[in-house]
Every structure is written in structure tokens, then in C-alpha cells.
Amino acid sequence: MESEAGERADGEYKGRLRKHKMRVRIIAAVSVTLVIVLAAVLCFVNYGSGYKSYTVRNSVSRRDNGYARYINFDSGYVRCSRDGTAMYSYDGVQQWNKTYEMKSPLTDVCGQYMAVADTEGNEIYLFDRNGYISTVNTALPIMQIRMSSNGTVAATLEDSDAVYINMYDSEGEKIYSIKSTVSGNGVPVSMDLSPDGHLLIVSYTSVESQKLATSVVFYNFGEVGQSEVERVVGGYDTYGEQLVADVRFIGSGTALAVGENVISFFKVGEYPKLVSELALEFTVDKVFYSDKYVGLEYADKDNSKKVAVYDMSGGYVATLDAGGKYSQYAFAGDSLLMYGDSSVRLINMKGKVLFDGSIEEGIVEMIPISGDSEYICLGPDKLMRIEFKHGG
Image 1 (cartoon, rainbow, N blue to C red):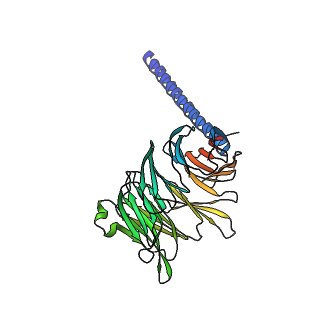
Image 2: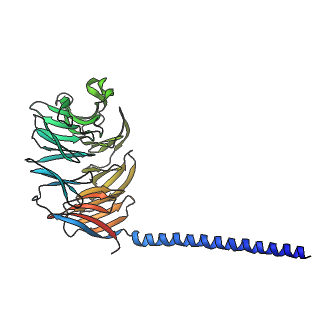
Image 3: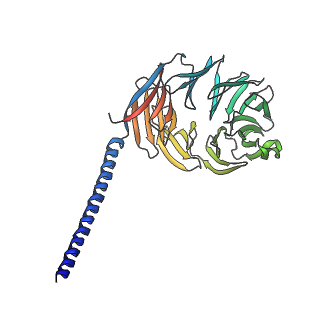
């Protein structure tokens, strides 16, 4: 009897122990759930309504009389003006400087390389993250330049009866030349180099039977291109009389061609492949890019400015209202930055406004440097590093 009573007592104890452990687990699970819910609530309270203000992390006075261009480069920014190019850290500390004299500088950046040339001049200055590398002498007037991430630079040059696209290495030596004429393959309107410098995309406009004709041509300067006539590895002439005013490589695998009412998306390897071509129901007024998105500004039937956003495969992402106060745009992470004069709006791809306000110091240009919260803000009198803040 005592043994049976002991067994019953032991069973009851183990039962109570199991129930106690179960209650502990339930309480722990509920506690974790409450913490998660509370964190979500706090996140919504703090971030759901977006940024409320901004802070100026540092600023420096401008001494360029408004003639300089500022460009995000490597781990800082460069100031390119008529009398020289200098690189600064994001805190405004000068890293290097190169002086020259130009009337109207052209610039292009790819990776850790940058090219600067004078419009209609005949010299291209090449830079990397450490400063000046070399000077390219083109002999002919320069119309356009494009940089690659291996130091190769392409330049569109104008002669009296033809236009040339010349390729140069980082030491200034010419490595290839493409000649074009109005009566031949046409005049190049826009061109771009792939990041590795192996591919070139060019949009041409020619005259056929007294009508404009546009084509987009790909060239390959690697081993594959050696076996192709004039290194041409792809040609597309589906644009009719539309002017294709902008062609661009996005990273190493995508190229775009933007016409007045059309945009083409290409997958590029040794040879290009057209993956999507969109006939647009509007006329493109402005185009801008990031590594993930392309934005097209246009005016709708009510003359209201809109921005249509697509991903790099040609997929539609969003149409965002650009309002009447904004004249410039930039992608900041997965958000669109719109600004003009002193007004700023930051909006995500679902149409949610994350910031809508003004920069009291005024805005000439804003350059995203970290996600959608941190920017280099160029004002009329100073250059600032600003950060948007949640809360007041």
C-alpha cells in the first residue's frame, strides 16, 4: 500500500511538474510575442510616417562661383570646375587636386576611374581614386566621353566630314577607332562603355530617303569581336524615325536604349539579346538611372509631371506623381528623391511619402550616399552632408 501511495505521489508530482513547465513555456511564448508586437508598434510609430527632419552633419563653403559640378566618387566626392578637379572625403577634407583650364568640362565616372574633358577641346584627363593618371590627346574636338572601370575611355570626336568614336587605354594610347558619316552608318547620338570596357553601345541617326532612321549597335572589343566585321556583335533598327537620345550600360549584364516613345532592355554578354521593348504611351522628357531602376519623367494629358519607374528587366514598378516643385531626380535605395530650389520629396515605390519638406539652405543638387537617409546637398553657398531623421 505504501508503495502504491508513493507511486501515486510521484506521478502527481511529475504531472504538476509537466504542467508547471508547460505554463513556463506558454508564458515565455506570450512574452516573446508581446515583445515582437511592441517592437512592431514602436517601429510603426517611429518610422511609419517617414522622416520628419534632417540634420547637417558637416558643411563647407563653396568657392566656385556656381560653376563647379560635384560627383559621388569612390569613398567621397569630386569637385570638377573650369580650373581643376579635386577629391574630398564626405567630411570635406581634400584628398587630391589637379589644375587645368577648360571652358565647359565634361565628366564621366565608372567604378574607381573618372574622365574629365573640355567640350570641343582635345584633351581628356584620367583619374583614379588616388588622383591624376594621364592625359589623352585626341587631336579632334571632343563631343562626348565615357569611362570604364578598367581605365579605358571612349570619346566621340567631330571632324569636318565624319564623326569618330575612339577608344583609349589608361595611358592615353588609342586602341580602336570607329568612323561614321550621315550617309553611311549615321551620326552617333549617344554611346556608352560597359564597365569592363569590352562592349560599346551606340545609337546612330542617319538619313534614308529623306527620312530620319535610328539604329542601336553593339561592338565587342574582346576576343569574340575580333572575328566579327568591324567588331559589330548586334544591331537593332526597330526605332524608325524616333531619336534614341540615351543608351546606357547598367552594371555588367544590362543595357538600355531610351527613345522618345520607346525603351529597350538588353541582356549583354559577349553578344546582346533584346529581352524587352516597351512602346510608351507618353513622350520621355528626362531619364535617370540607378543599378536597380530606370526613371522616365513625362507630362500626362493634364500636363502634370509623372515619373514611370521600371526595373532592369523591363518590369513595371510604379508611376509616381512628381508635382510641380521638382526639377531633378535621383534614386536613393528603393526610394525616389525629387527636389528643386529648396523643396524635397522622398517617396518609396509603393507611393508612400517618406519626407516632404525643404532644405532651408537651398538646393542646387542632392547626391545620395547612404540608402535613402544620407546625402551630399549642394546649396548656393555651401556644400553639406545631411541626414534625414525620424521624429522631430
